[in-house]
Length: 414
Image (cartoon, rainbow, N blue to C red; front, side, top):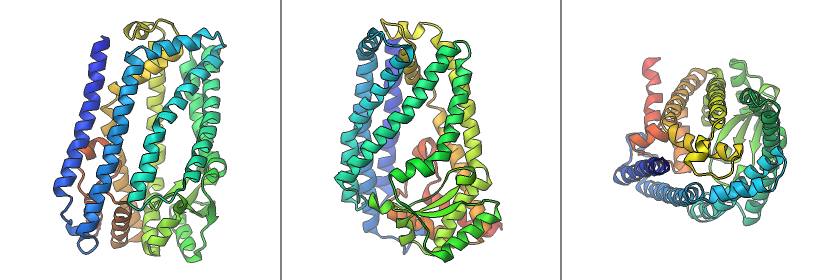
């Protein structure tokens, strides 16, 4: 059975590498052709730069993934997990402290192992293509802040969840789910005020004309913003973006300073209108509801499986602990739930198309939307020719050329 699981895992990873290779080959074969939608907007030099950038990112991702897979196989199938589990349980600590130590050390190990790839991606690839503006000092500062915050938040999660498991052995799956749901809402409330400002500086939008147009746009669909802010994203990268953050009275729109510098007011309004479309169509609420449903089902399945010792037997774990069972079940879940990824991606792409339609309804203009998308694509060096299978499996947004054609079709259907 153990060999079968290992084979299934290797097949899964091999399939994903094959799809990634197909995507790279498809881009290499077609990426030198300027799509009609980009005629006069780009050139062969920029297309080559895009292909090179996407290829280097992909190969770094492959290197990182292969390294991670080797570590996982050695850890789970090579006996290291059994040794680690026995070492933690041998300390004879309390249940909650043992669980906290078990998971927190694994999270630190994962973070440490990812550092070389993060450094190479930031200071080699992003530097090479003109995106990175981060200094080594800022990178280190972000790393330590992230470690401290993740340690605090993860500790809160772990100690509470482990206490609930002890407090209600028969129904902890439901109480843990309830806590995680409340915790998620809590983070959405405090993040704009407590966490996000630790990494970036947020200032009120200075352009009163743009601010007034944004507020008027949100009022059309019943959104009452607390603030419209600008973020100093250019301290770290030249990539562009805009987003909603917070819920309830903490709702705010955040614009990257790079976006403000690269687009005119009408284009920015079209981007904001798209984000408003997600709110109007209740996409976040729908995705949260689906996530919570699957989380509840997943926790109940977890509760059922960990009652037995089948995982300990199959993976040849010598010391019984619920913590190691959680790890093994998570590993198996990553294999079993592979088909759900394309389904989630399909729903996300559908939501993006719906948001594009709302943007058109609010602005009654397609060319500003198209112009904004072309600029975003060029500035972020987005792949214009992804492989259809890669899109099906991984793309949360429709490919940019397809999306532009869809948006321009609004004029005919209106």
